[in-house]
Image (cartoon, rainbow, N blue to C red; front, side, top):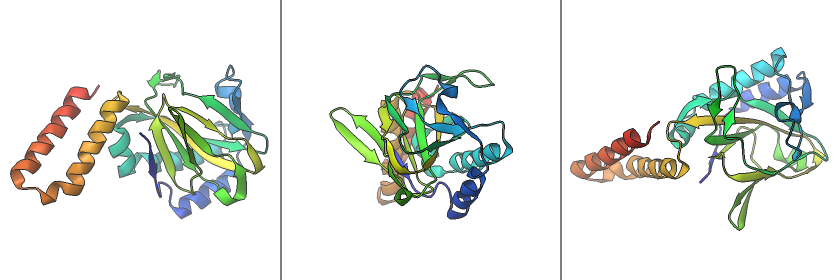
Length: 220
């Protein structure tokens, strides 16, 4: 299951990130994964002040978003990294690594996310393709939108044929590592939030009891 979250970045924050991106030094995207021959893009050099500031803006917005928290149950969120795709660049089909080497120690990647910054009309190609069995879901988000999905999902970025694709990517370690359990708990909580006030108090309390109990059982 995946979720498209709108307005993770406000229009003002999108503009601020775009301004910072003009001064960011970009490097070969394979610097963080040199053995991945499917990866042909650019990513921000995080030694630069502008890249760090852009990541701080995105990180605060993601951490503060209620929809993201309710869907991913994040324990830790990796620093968002700004990526750029120019004509001819792509990222072939892959699933994300199970663990990320961070300065604080390895972080398990349960949930992956792409936070769109660029205007989709400003580039051709560059769609995020998520493969679900024999079906493929294609996403080209608006500025400030973020797509969130299990890290073991097979996905790719289609080749860019015109313009520039600008987006953050990040990973989350979830309190609920199992993606099926995470989806069930998210769905149950959504039902409670949307329908709970229509129930009599006893059934509403019972539903909350089930949700809280499963959260305790499945949390790691």
